Image (cartoon, rainbow, N blue to C red; front, side):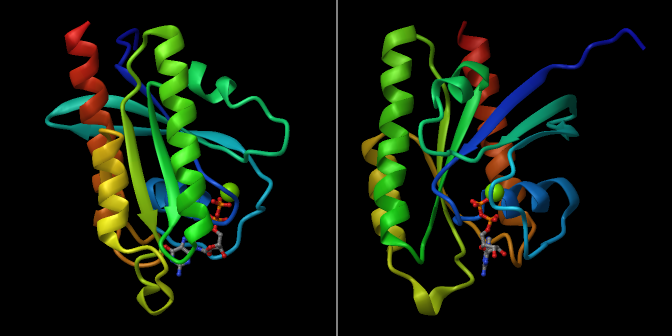
Amino acid sequence: SSVSLPEFNIALLGVLGVGKSALTVKYLTRRYIMEYDPYMEDTYTKHECIDAQEIIVRIMDTYDREGSDPERYLRWADGIIVVYSITSRQSYEEARNYICSVLNYQNKTTREIPLALVGNKMDLERYRQVSKAEGSALATEQECLFYETTAAEDYQCVETVFHGIVKEIQREKERQ
Ligand code: GDP
Ligand code: MG
């Protein structure tokens, strides 16, 4: 068919091990797979129906190696999901840096890129190092969406993140 569906490019950023690949696979397949090649980077496509509208979601599951150009992701993306693990304070601190790099890019290009902050691994409550309030405070400060998720258990919370960012991108497109 020649009908082209609206496309939404979403990139996941965050330090190694926070669960970017696990969240991506969960969203695509509803399954949790424990082991991934940590250095793999790929782009995936999912057909979706959100609010009775058929769309195509493209997801870039990144691996931010030393010296890689983060702007490569930002140029491509309509929306960004910054992931940290609730079990790693360092990954939360790094999330702030990722958010700042997105905002810097935005200011430079005057293009609004909807942003979601995600605290993953909420099933590991016993090992929590970052409170929900801290995650929420960072998101409020940076004016982005905020969610806590687990790729290991509930599918719904993962879907909510992707649908949330898609809707934010739709709103942004309507403003233009
Ligand atoms: P990435 O480097 O950000 O892509 O992280 P991965 O998706 O490869 O996940 C790193 C490790 O954390 C893997 O062993 C995953 O099985 C595990 N993991 C990812 N998400 C979760 C989660 O929500 N809960 C738990 N318990 N483990 C997770
Ligand atoms: Mg990965």
